[in-house]
Length: 53
Image (tube, rainbow, N blue to C red; front, side, top):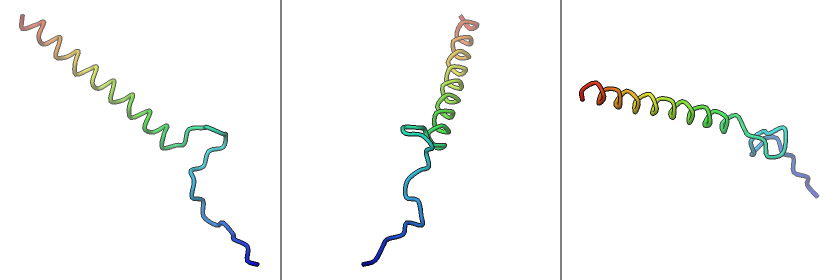
């Protein structure tokens, strides 16, 4: 009978159950940066419209 040895990890490393992986944390940071950039753009458009009125 042969035994199967697992040499390569096919699953992401998470030290705790249900812990976020590094990729998920990166996506969360990028989402927050996108929200900040969108808010800055919207507020600058509103400021432009107020100054033109």
